Length: 189
Image (cartoon, rainbow, N blue to C red):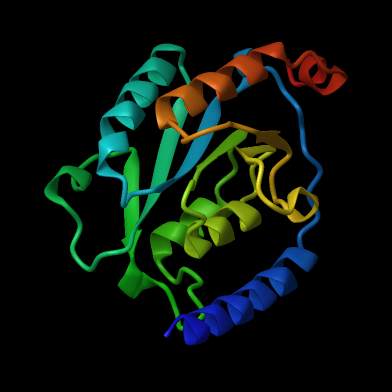
């Protein structure tokens, strides 16, 4: 069964490569102070992270930053706690095609939305989330360093040793974004 799944994902990666070849995108390295919109892709199979994301959303809202979260839940039915939250949408495994590419209107809307920053919280390397992160139109994309950093869709990669903790990861993201002091950040003002 894994062989078929791997073949389907390989075909999905090929489709993704074709779509990415048509995208012209230049990263904009901006300081956290200048960021106004944040998109987060999240592996929603980790319900223990939901409260961490809620606190992060609240913290960013206090700084007048608009946060949207798109989750991927590998089950058929969403847990009750994931519903009726304005800033959070989630697509399920029945909303991906044969090649594990998302076909949900929420995923397509998220991909086409312009964010100043995209944060990838996809520690399990779910292909549907990788697909969304890769095609996102965000100015700056942040994610974990993977096994093939040269083919990563991320502009800023964070390396963490040991087990990855979402709360610590988000702290690192904010820490490094506060350190950015580039010419493009000065032009963004």
